[in-house]
Image 1 (cartoon, rainbow, N blue to C red):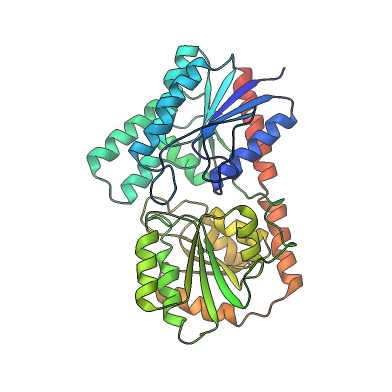
Image 2 (tube, rainbow, N blue to C red; image 1 turned 90 degrees about the vertical axis):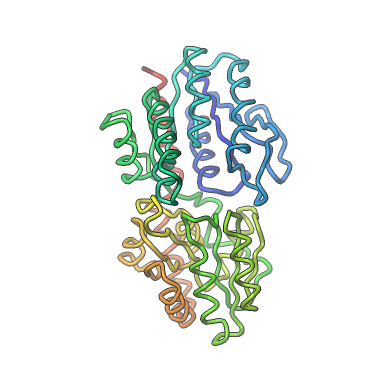
Amino acid sequence: MPLRILVATRIYAPETGAAAFRLAAMVKALEGRGHHVTVLTTSSPGGKKSSPTVRRWPVLRDKAGAVRGYVQYASFDIPLFFRLLTAPAFDLVVVEPPPTTGVVVRVATALRRKPFVYFAADVSSVAAEGIGVSPAVVRVLRAIERWTLSKARRILTVSEGVSVAVASLVGPSDRIVNVGTGVDTGQFTLDGPTGRDTGRYFVYAGTMSEIQGAGVFVDGFIRIADEFPDVRLVMLGQGVELEALRTRAQEASAPIEFRGNVDGGQVSAALRGSVAGLASVRPSRGYDFAFATKALVSLSCGTPVIYAGVGPLRDIISGEKLGLSVDWDAAAVASAMRAALAWPRDSTERRRISQWVENNYSLTSVGAKAATAIEAAGGN
């Protein structure tokens, strides 16, 4: 029997980001199985309008264009509460972090006497502790997450590491389902245009925050800029560290371009023509278990990766010969960049890299697993 499903999320396609792509794949899989899905999300920066299946609401965004911060979250969460209370009859809600949105969904679904599924791409209290948020705030955040997750019919996670972190809050449970992570291999492809960029360049495409530590690539590139005057660094995306990184690049007079948020097509084009994609997870910031999806985006385009820091992808990239893995260290990154500039551009090797992602980390399989778990939750 078809389910009537609401998806509550502050980010959704066409915005770029792992959550947006992951949820779009989930919705596609659910609709492909005959379920009726309505997404309750935000107005996108590009002006995408609401449709019968994607209902958008204007929200506050920070200077980087992201819905991040207590005031920004509230601008989505408060209207969401009333949107859920007044929504036509539904069977189930799927909610994406932050935890404040989870609280709204738990309360609203309780009032509507309906279940919800929590799609835990991360555990916010763990991340907050890792970046040095005060212990008092971390305790409150942990209590909020525990309270929310304790009522979820299912908790979907993107990796074994996130599953373990969730279990530390709610205890081991068969409600926790690891659906994995991946990329849209239909959008991020080997074949396609290379865009406006020519010559030799590196690409970082993703969030620039304390957790990712993208500054290691800026600092690493500055060290080699004089050796390779024809090489550029292209930084795509936003984040709380963006202005600081821009200042460091300007002070060093290094050829580093910050282009802000761009759509998936532009990301793909830039990566296809680049020497290497760049991805990182900064150690000891509460996300040592994180799966850096931006690395998979690069690999899906057939572009090898320089990976800096920790996380499961570090060993995978080295073991599968998908690029270079190094410590989160500017000198180590600079050495990796020098090595990458000597790589031959081998079309056969790039096709192998792209196919590896298709075989192992396609979002199609993630969407299918999520859909199966949601169907089970709706059938209880």
